[in-house]
Image (cartoon, rainbow, N blue to C red; front, top):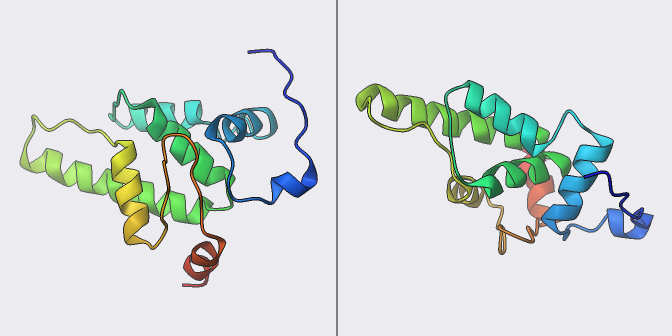
Length: 132
């Protein structure tokens, strides 16, 4: 855990294709307030549970990619959807999976290729979404 990660050259920092592990390491080292662990704690405090660790990594990755507003509204929508399901069926588990996030992004025009390892975010779609 205390291993030092080599610094990433500035030219690489602007690329939209990054391995999740590198993003998570950067997120934890540079922005300890935005990490998958914090996201996991927030969701679990709201009653959400998932065995899908990639779900938290993916949210942390998106948050680290200048998508805070998009990620926030997306996760809020997913949480509200789950709350409504729980009201109708008390046995329903409150949980969000990586697939839920991928589907939600899909609806918003963002395609993630192999979201479990290397999310690729299309800069044009990102800009279009920010302008909406």
